[in-house]
Image (tube, rainbow over all chains, first blue to last red; front, side, top):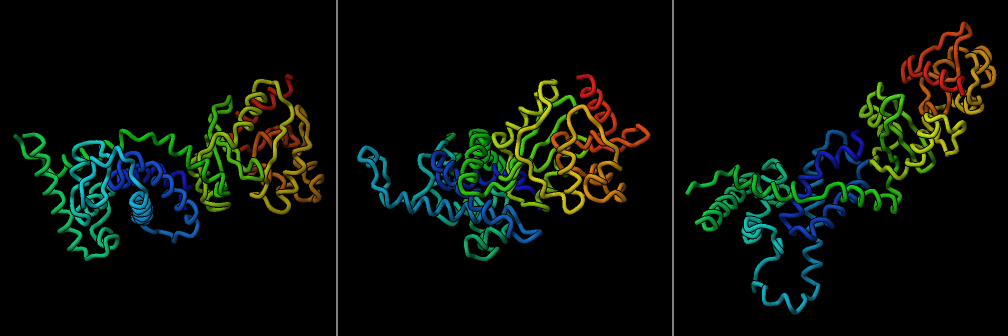
Length: 158
Length: 205
């Protein structure tokens, strides 16, 4: 079994991409730390030859969702109310780039499919398992997400 | 304008997370949290020394492994993961005191190590040998026969030799002070040249 330090070194950047894409840069640090602390706790029981990247992405997914729920329960400071988009699903905010902003505007399934397939580099089968949909649906969602991002990209530059 | 490829979009999304994150700070925070929750089973750091780059690893009970460069530190860490626990993180603070005492030793300013040692990697007779080695004073040497006798089995000279050769905490547990009766050095985890240099340094002091 690899020493946990090697797991952090190998997969730390991937988990950070997931956390930043789901939460934005500020809360991502907390989610990253929570993810690896949980993983460290469970690591000795991880079965040999497990898909470590998929396992970590699943933990990060749950930690990010926990944080999004906690954020939803927190009263927002009054000064920020003007910035709220009514009805928007909680996405990464504040976004660190316009592209991340665009990512936050995608429908949930498309956003998560893009994050897990392209930023976490998981297989479509793993993405499907995380999103509780078929492999084919995961593939469609990721393609849809990228297509939408391409459009917003072109709007940015035009 | 050019239509961006999928790869460009993905690279742009990836870039910020990879470039703007202070992974060293996050790793340090992970070590602190792990330590606070008793999840740091093995902490380690490396240090440069006249005997080459050393790996120092400790459990909460004490220094558990000193490895020379010859041994390949990655391999040693994997062995520790199997033998003790895979909950292993780089954490200089836990072994900084060991590094300081080793620096003093190599500078000729320290003759005795004052630090907790965890001998869990050595069992039975091998462990008895290591316990005895800690009593061989700086600058002195003993033969493998004398060591075998002191560890409780005068006939186990060969086993005493392999206990020294597999000492998990060389330098601090001074297996380099055990030599063959014919005056040759015998094997050493750090290589014969290092053993020779240590004995020369100690006898000159």
